[in-house]
Image (cartoon, rainbow, N blue to C red):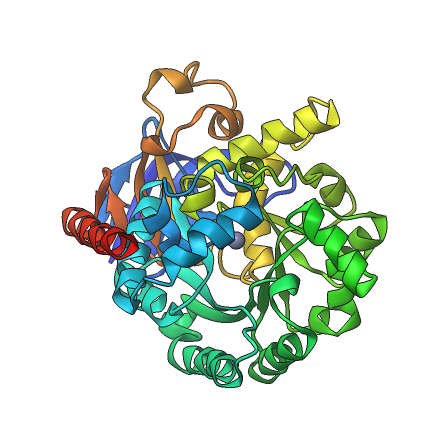
Length: 434
Ligand SMILES: [Zn+2]
């Protein structure tokens, strides 16, 4: 299939400085083949661009998509209590199929809010992989591990990671990738982390891990290991993996920031989850100034409570201004970069996604700007996306040239069926709780 957008506003995200062009854009197969004025109308489908804007799809660098099932269950608790009293007991009752249904629900929400790529960590990740295969979204999946001390169980987790790589890594020309996913330093011991590092190095995959999410995590790490979590990870060699995505990184001292920069650790910044769990506010502006690569993530829907990247990036920008008492902090364009091309860098795929550029994969979203909150239409579109837009304005979500959502309608997920399946799970799990 080919699609031609005529005279459409385009935020290409391929420049250091804000740039919006009015041009034609042609997609042939899975790629953007031409961005130019006056491309002849020979495509299968032509979209007239008046009052429409296209930009790269959002890249959600940290999610637990199946936790959509836990939305609204266990709010207003601090992280450790939230995990041990609510989340982990609930999760122990989930079947493989539940994880699949939860993933469908989360992917539906993401496609409707303009996310074209996400990095996920959970259990039973083959079910998340299956949901992604079917839904057409780009996803990177990591097998979340928590060291149990039960040899058989822990070995199984490592075998599952290898199986996940065999089955899904580089599926559909790289649309799906697999990473190792040690949950955190405090839930894994050194030997178990090194075992996952060995797999990452041997199979040439990345590592996805939660780091320095709370003050307590840092204090405990200093007490037990004499080092901050990121310094400890450097010490045991984890940061020498092919690439590392560190989620949260709220509490980084100057040395920690140096480590992140030197070891090219990609940070997944989750402003809303960090606020909601009372974890704190990462000084992202400081990290960016130092040249550390930062993307944006939503975390799971149980700690946010949605997976809406537009809402997330708007929080990210406003928070940095308030935190730094500086209206110039994390400006509109910097924030959009974090949600697109910088996120692609964090996930190690910036050579094919994250920008609208000839030869790049056609992962894009389209906004309908014919609404009061986009007027005056003459003013900066970058500002409007960063500060005024709502995800319900997105009328097209496309991954690798395939439209997965058109005019708010999903093409690969049956929403009504998914809602019904979700309700059946909740009814069953709650009954077990009684
Ligand atoms: Zn997380």
